[in-house]
Amino acid sequence: MAQSWLIARRELKAYFDGLTGYVVLVFFLLITGWFFGNSLFINNIATVQQIFDMTPLLFMFFVPALTMGAFAEERRSGTLELLLTMPLRDWQVILAKLLATTVLCLIAISFTLVYVFIIAALGNMDAGATTGGYIGMALYGLTCAVIGIYASSLTRNQIVAYLLGFVIILVFFLLDKSAPLLPATFGNVVEYLGTDYHYNNLMRGVIDTRDLLYYASLMLFFGLMTAHNLAKRDI
Image 1 (tube, one colour):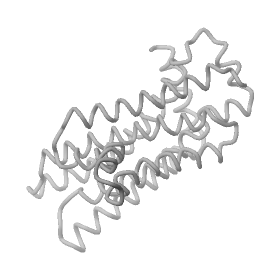
Image 2 (cartoon, one colour; image 1 turned 120 degrees about the vertical axis):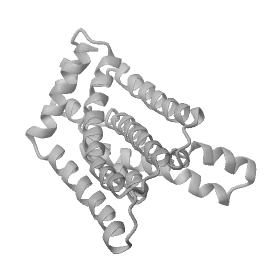
Image 3 (cartoon, one colour; image 1 turned 90 degrees about the vertical axis):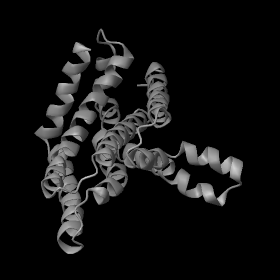
Image 4 (cartoon, one colour; image 1 turned 60 degrees about the vertical axis):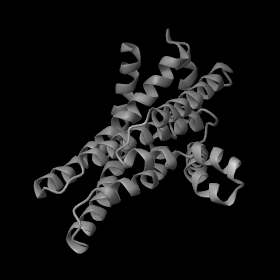
């Protein structure tokens, strides 16, 4: 774990040595702030619901931008071979990449807590739904990060990695929305596979183990797929 954290710190430093980390944080806060201000000052509704509603779309665009270089850039620059020959297991390298992206996502999410404090001060906050919403945001961001890292392990081109990550996240986002168009039995399965379906459950303040297991299973699946790609040593 300590070795993974050392690599994760290097990844985090790279985010903030360049513009990527700042650009993602600034745009995330500007967009969430606009939606919060719009509901509070124009519609006169004190809620963070619109932020929760927008988060899957924001993560869909921003998280692949954070993860696209995770392995693609290492592969292009030739440092992946060096990284994989270090006394580290592949899962430790994957965990390090995931830790760096997760920390950045959590920083972005934590900044939105100021909106919660404002609503709490106004005395009109549903604590259960807000807690569920934040748990959902964290799990959704983590899942997008794992998918983005998997996409980055498939190529040495960062743009291709971004597009692959974006498309996979988009497909899972749309699954539950396409379910009503399908036969009932098949539709129920497709709906359950959708990331947004479980996110909406959490936003209602219901912390169901089925939703938590779904996200854990999806992360495990793409984590194993990433490990499989690295195990090929196709550098």
